[in-house]
Length: 316
Image (tube, rainbow, N blue to C red; front, top):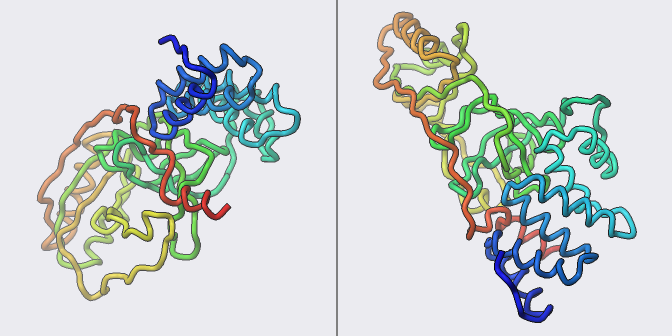
């Protein structure tokens, strides 16, 4: 760790400035230097814990957030949340339950993982690299199971369990109401459903529906990427979702792009083959199983702050 010889005011300013521009390793070193001089400063413990949360370093994040909790005079919700997240990431279930309950969040009793129904929300995968958003079913306050078939480039799969941040960074419209969007932090459990990409063509929506409704052993989910994958307008991207005019139902698009979650290549291949045999004019133009690693996190990008969160701060 580099040595810092500046006075406390300069160190303080440099530490917060590094954090603000996403230089997490630098910020951690500066907060460590400040803590060497002021070991009982709860704010510096909290900030170093925050930096290490975004560095995905759960032991160090948990250590400093717990120390911040010890130093505060009254209940600190931010400190408890930011301790509960790394405790969850580490699988420290007894500590995670105690921290969530201190935040007023109901969690089921038990000794193992927290498993309940905390509703459906949207998660931004790999927010430091592209940030594809998919739907998820939350099974504890910050763990969720992916409900969509993510793009192969995300390195993630249908039915993965991910750890997500606690603060919403915006909202999406589910057709009836606004739902929160959270940043994914880490994949905790990889599913056994590989992502297969298929390009098909058919003459009618009825033909296509027969494929979407198909079932087979080892098949998880078939998603029509033709419409579900799209770029959000500026209002939606900045956390202000609104209604978009739906495409005309009469304007059928015969060429469709599919994401197929299947446990084996044979399962997906059989579903496509059976579908083609089941009607005239049905065609598979391409079929592949691209494999990608999850993009590595890098410093220098403040991915945890979005235009939506900045607007919220301005209105607070």
